[in-house]
Length: 144
Image (tube, rainbow, N blue to C red; front, side, top):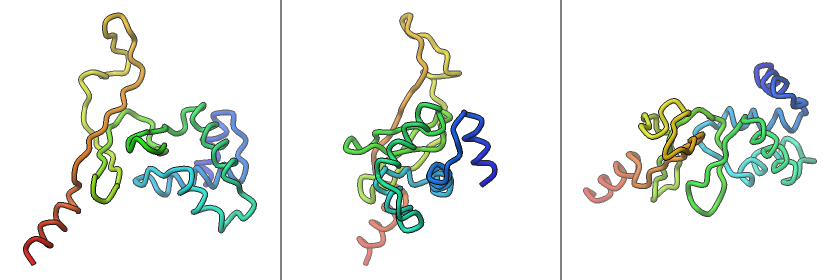
C-alpha cells in the first residue's frame, strides 16, 4: 500500500482512502481491465459511502496523471488498465476476457515516431478472436 501511496504523491494526488482503494483494486486485478461499474461493485462493500461518481472522478484524475489508461476494446464500454507502457490487447469473442499481449509495434517504435510529419504519441492495438481456454473447452465439448 505504501508503494501505491507514493505513486499518487509523486503525481501530486492526495492519497485519499478511495483513491488508494481504487488503485489497489487496479493493481490487484491487473488482468481484468475493469469497468467503472466493476470497480464500484468490488469496493462498495468495503467502502459503503463510495459512489460511482467518486470512482469516475478518481479514474479521471488517474488518467490525467497517466497512472492508468482507458481502453475501448469492446466498443461498448471503457476498460481501465494500470499498465500504461505500450502493449496490445486480445479480446476473446466467447468469454469476453481481455488479455495483455506483449508484441513489438513497428509503427510505434520508441514512441517518438513521425509519420507524414505527424508525431505519434500513442498506439492502441487490439486483436479479437477466441482465447486458448475457450478453444480448449470447445475441443473438449466437440469430442464428448
